[in-house]
Every structure is written in structure tokens, then in C-alpha cells.
Length: 108
Image (cartoon, rainbow, N blue to C red; front, side, top):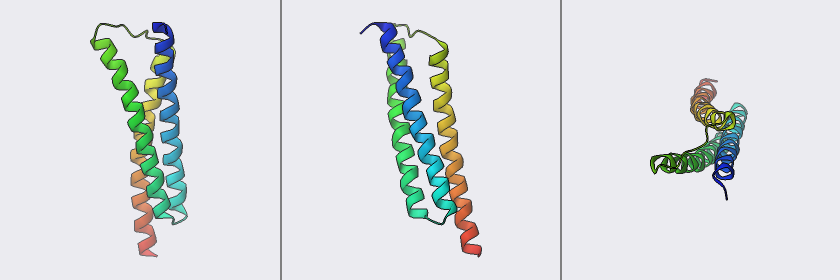
């Protein structure tokens, strides 16, 4: 595998895992809106698992760079990092929304 192929694989994996995490977080919000808090928690756990995989990929990228192997900085690489940061933020907001839905349900 060439360095360019490796870098492309890193970026695409980050995008895929981050996208999965964001989707699971959205599913968690939808479940909690319906009052399905156990399902919402399971979806958040799935989101966290996807984020963990994404972090492993990111750590590999950083390790390669630290070892002197240059990572080709392309628009796709930047885009993959953006996806990761957005997914992390989205999961955190999903947790807050679920907590709010729980408060609202208790007050009804």
C-alpha cells in the first residue's frame, strides 16, 4: 500500500466512523423524544463506540506523523477531521437533549 493509499484509507475510515457516530446520536435523540430512554442510551453507547474507533484511526495518523512519516494533507484529510469533531459535538449535544427530555417527561 502506498502512503497516498494509506492516507486515503485513514481519511475515509474517519469519515465512516464519524458518520456512524452522528447517526447513532441522532437516533438517540429521536428515541428519547418518544420517551424510549433505554433505546436512547443504547444508541449513545453505539455512538461512543464509533467515536472510539475513529479516535483509534486518528491516533494511528498522529503516530505515523510523530514517527516522521508525513501524512498527505488533502482537503479530504481536513474534511475527515471536521467530521470527527462534528460527531463528537453532536454526541455531546444529544446527551444534553436526552437529559432534557427526561426532565420534561418527569414534569408531565
